[in-house]
Length: 315
Picture 1 (cartoon, one colour):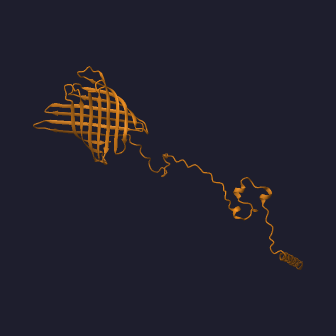
Picture 2 (cartoon, rainbow, N blue to C red):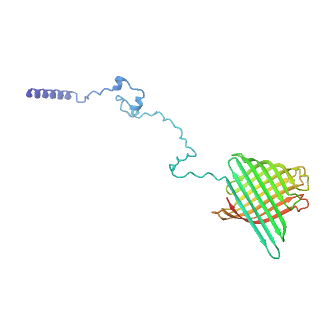
């Protein structure tokens, strides 16, 4: 049996060698492609690549007209990340909300005792609250002077103005109130109500210029007049300029002409130079001048000019 099997193997080898000698370039037939028999599934041509029977050529292997990839829209990135979703993963505390209120409380006094007894006192405050659609400003000053036992001055002035802002536009609408007290004038109290339009020329960190114009009415109480409301116009400006972090100038002016007689008018103006003494505590020194002018003051003088130096605290 072993001899017979060996003879059969030798015979097969001889026959194969004889066939190879007759056709030395013959190759075994290619393997069948399952896709030729069963068909290609949808999208398989792009996913599985070329078939086995495709010629091996540059044009067939690297086609020129390839489909362009579909462009995806850019991802939407929120302008403000919710708490806990920042780059730090919410480990740092959130930023504090923007400060709405800012202002100064100030006071100053001087005096003498001896051959002349003099006592002068001045105090006041100013405040400002600003949002995207509203600007509220108010200021108050009280002045008292006494010399040799006689009161030389006792007056107070309160201003308040509320403005409606229009984001992206320089125009605004304002409503203003002014209350004035003066013990030495013919009247004791004067109150006024006004409305009008404002215009922002510039308002940034270092410079401010706002203009306004409008109309209203004023009334004097406890005076020699008939205590009636008188129509007035109002024109004014607010100016502030910072030279650096510690030095600035401020000026406010309001002009009130009578509607029925423009020859009669009032002016309320003040200007000051501010020096921040200590930025940490907000201590500020203010040197300034304030003028109250009336074209028809009655038995009083037309001009009341006050020079002052006060210390204040910013908030």
